[in-house]
Length: 229
Image 1 (cartoon, rainbow, N blue to C red):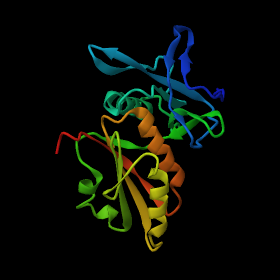
Image 2: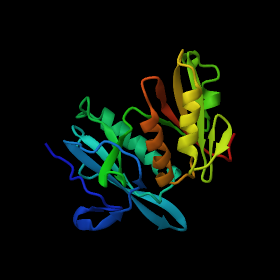
Image 3: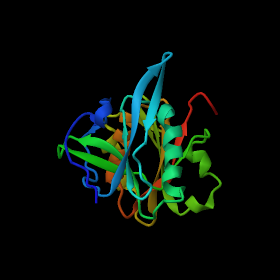
């Protein structure tokens, strides 16, 4: 079984190609040991004044877990098409194996180790809808306390109330404590397509670590264009 070496680095190198990925650095704990894995690389590149993601998955094996090493400088709009395509290949190729999951990698400054966030089963919607509109006429969500989180480059909204990166964790924690426990809570995540991957994973790891038995995270994540709708 292949086991990932757990090291604390702000970047990872792809073998003899010596190409560098600057992975996110976060003060949040995650999974810290994955066996039987393959690695996907998304490199940062600027071409014709546009930021693009260069994908390398030459050594991926469908019967393993997949670890996505993504450069933190890439915006979501540059990486989401590739992530969606790779998720489908991992889950639905003829050699896919049940129980093999997808993970994002990052450097954890608390434990000073390479850590991972599982995103297996997440569906990324890029059709312009926000979560509040999506669930409006959907009976599946009526039995939850629904909390809508919207993330932009310079701010976040918690049920329409503006906060910032520094105060987000405390303000969300305080709100979650106010809810009665007669219903489960569900967090709905909306990310501006221009948000950098570093910021996406910053918010995503905080939310993951706040989830409990009574606090669920919608497996649909909404990647929206602020210039549409």
